[in-house]
Image 1 (cartoon, one colour):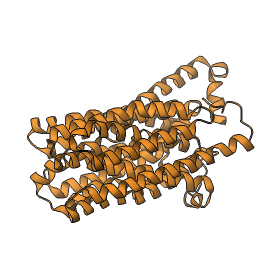
Image 2 (tube, rainbow, N blue to C red):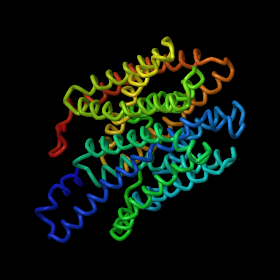
Image 3 (cartoon, rainbow, N blue to C red):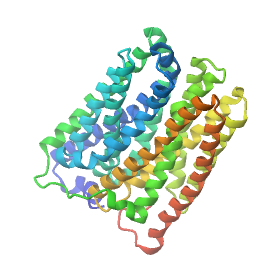
Image 4 (cartoon, rainbow, N blue to C red):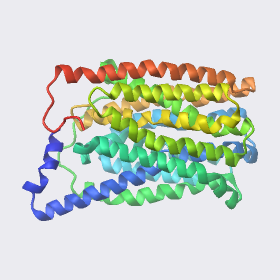
Amino acid sequence: MASSMATSALPETAPPAVARASRGVAIAGVVAIVLIGLNLRAGITGASALLHDLQQVLGYGPLVAAIIPSVPTLCFAVAGAATSWLTRLLGLEKAILLSLVLLAAGLLVRGIPSTGMLLAGTVVGMSGLAICNVAMPSFIRVHFAHRTSLMTALYTVTMTTGATVVAVLIVPVAQQLGSPSAGVGAIGFLALGACLGFLPIALHAHRNAPAVKAGRVSPWPLLRTRTGALITLGFTVQALLAYAVLSWFPYMLVTLGLSASEGGLMFGLMQLVSVPAGMVLVAIGSRPRMQRTAFYLATVTMAAGVLSMLVLPVVWAPLTAVLLGFGLGIFPLVMVMISRSGRTTAETTALSTVAQSAGYLLATLGPFGMGLLHSATGSWTLPLVLLLAVALGQIAVGHLLTARAKVPRRTEPQPAGEGHR
């Protein structure tokens, strides 16, 4: 809140040179958010679209096939838990730069045609992605305190845009390169671009680092608070649904009769729909007393998408992709809630850490469980039935989250500059 007021007062109180530097840093920050957003799901969706081909070429069995889609959420839980410590040690911006280096290195290693390198590269890359995931709400709060909703929407839109483009193009690219491993490895060059784009921000932060270190807030006690528990629960359920769908949707379509290219196209359609869906849901949820409506739209649509996948023939895949894509738009709503939570940046980082670490750890049951159940039963029916139960549960979770969001409006005065946008 104080940082927001200081930022808005800059043109009146700062010398012109400082104001120009601040504007330059702000522009670089927006560019960095876009470049980072393009990478936040590209490495996951690229691998998902090629899972069937990778298994055929590399020859790994059903256990490894179930493990590979589960690695991202496990890394998000374990590596994400270290983000608060890492940001205190290095500083927020340098921690994000390190995460982008790990992401690029891991994705490039996946280009080596070996099951071991595929697993190792996924662990390294997704660990970097985990740190970046947790740190981004705090980065937005620090650099864009008066534009948290707008900047969160921007980076989630670019996230889904990057995922969409990669999902659509990755199969043709892999075919042109002659190897699915080369296809997933090529995504690493996109991450290299994010490293270069974020470097000016990290250098500026290093040159202007404050002499006093930021305060420390322990993440895990937040689980005992109502806010921490509800946000963690909401993040867990949406992450379980999202990564179960992101990991297996194109694979399911291929096993049900579509070609790899058609499955990638439907996967891209799902991601494409999630871009405007996230914008619409954030716009609705930002209005007074409309947040619950936004959550209902997202959660009910996700449940309808899972149900359609369960009962409709594969020729209805476009409808399923549209419904699931709209349901995936809930992610920006949850991230805006995290970015606006906490009285300080340290509290926001701590809340982001606990919500994403605990949430992703439990969310691993989604992709891993679906893979094992499919291998055990030879069918997608039981996995989809259980996923539908979770989707229905998300409706109740959204109700609780929005009830929590209304309490401060009734009992606490609105500080200046923090009204609804």
